[in-house]
Structures are given as structure tokens and as C-alpha cells.
Length: 353
Image 1: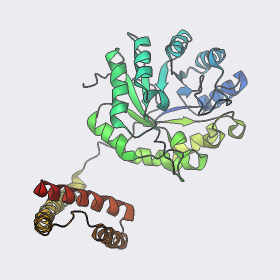
Image 2: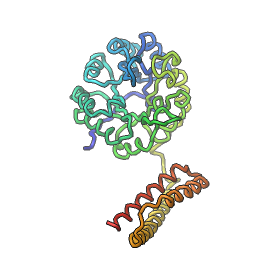
Image 3: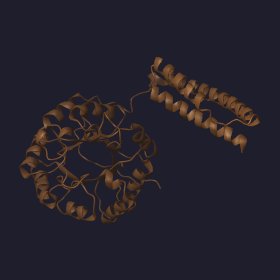
Image 4: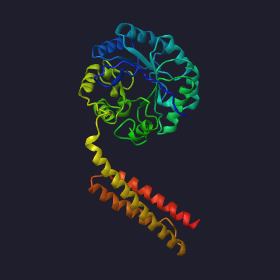
């Protein structure tokens, strides 16, 4: 299905990207109000705080629940910022709406569960409120889109997506692998869907927030959701990835926001050159496959196995070195030739069958 969308119509200062900011967790009334006041003084319009916190293991701080909702309401009344929090159950939705939440978001673990998403959709049936949906923990674009479709079918038209990266077993740089290509593909599939970036959860460390924000702007994201705490080192959850409102303001002041609608006249010829090179690549690949089919026929006539492990290893090693010398990532080159090899094998298998 195609999503039926309406504009979010959320406040922004029009000089910097749309930003939702606030602490990971609503810990105490004092912490919430101090952070909110500091953010409001820096021009923030949209405040966030986790009221219910899904934890990987039991025993961690799981949020104050309904006890924290009056604090959020006080933020709205005093600072006039919009308030938002994560919801994971119908009970969360009921309470969030009762206390006047302006924006809701769905966390990555919930997005990955179609049953949970349907329960949220049923709870939001007929409610007119902006809802952001984080990508699922695993890199599954269809699951992400499916979660938003469930909400859309329940009548939620003011939808947005949050790109917070994807869990990986051996990720050493980031807390969550950005896998920007998935968010880019989501934009290609649903161009009118607002997509904001969560650099806090992608980076997992406050020193990565600024470069990740700039990457998001360079890629044309519509905004940011960033964890900001009045005293990050003493935060009860995710202390390493939170920044003070003052630091957040400094990060945002340095951002270069690209103009997606700027004139492309200066790159028209370069795009034509790329099109010409792409055509040449396709012609070369077609010739390569012709030769691969000839090799397949030879292997069939001489009763040889299709896969030749030593030859495959030789190709990857040679082209990896060649790619590095040409300024390309060896990992990228390996992926390209792995795909080419798989197609070559597929075509040779067809000759035998």
C-alpha cells in the first residue's frame, strides 16, 4: 500500500534543522525541568524524554512511568515546547494522550514486532497526533515500512521515520551501524515521508554526535532527535551519548544544511558523463557474462565443477588491491565482485540445468 501522509506541522526556527531534544530518561522533576529550561533558552521547540524505558536486561532503570508525565506536562505549560515520549503498549498510549503529549515515537524493539505495532495502531485509531517510527533493530526495510503502514491504516496521517542505525555483533565504531543506504532507500520508496536522524543512538558516544549530525544533513535528512541532559555524566541511562543543552546548541550552530532544491546546472554535464560511464559498465558486464557462459559450456563438456574456489579467491584479492590503489574501499570492491561472481555462477548453472 501507499502511505497517506499529511505535513507534520511541527515548530522549528527555520534557521537550523528540525530538532527534538531532551534527556534519554525523565529521571526526576528537577532534572526534567532544568534540562527543559536550558533547552528552551537555546531556542528548542520540541522536548523529548523517555517515560518508559525498555532495557536489554532486567535490573536497569526502566523509567518512572506515569509518575513522570506531570513533569512533562509542566514542561509544556512553562516553556511552551511541544512534549514527546516513546510508547510501546496501548496503556502507554492512553496515558501519554491523557497528559497531553504532542508527539509520540515508537522504539526499535517495538517496530520489529508486528503484534506490538498492531496493538499500538488499534490504540491510536482515530487519534490525530504526529507519530515517529524508529527503524527496527535489524536491517529490514519492509518491516520498517510495514510498521508505518499499520499506523497509517489506523488513521495516523502525520507520520515520520527515525533512523537510529542497526544492531550488529561486531560493530566497533558506532553503537549502531548507520547503514545509511537503508534510510536512503526508504526515502526513494516514500519520498514524501519525513525522516529524521538519531545520532545519539547511532554513535553511542557524545564525541560522535556532531559528525553524525553533519552526515545526516549532507544526506538530506529532515531533522534530528538528540539526547540532551543538564548533567550527562550523572544520567541514569545512556550517559555516554548525551550532551548538555549548551553543547547541543554549539553543534547545531556549526551545521551546514544543504539546499536540496538548489540549481543543479553546474553538475548537469558531470551527470551526463556518469550516465555514459554507466552505459559502458553495462556493456562491459554483458561481455563478461558472455565469456562466463562460454566458460560454463567448457566446464560442462569437461565435467568440471562450476565453483572454482582458488580462482574466486584470486579475483577478490587482485581487485581488492587494485581498488585500494584507485582510492576505493577494498570492502566495496569485494562486494561488487562478489555480486558479479554470484551472477556468473547463476548463469553457468542455467547452462547445466
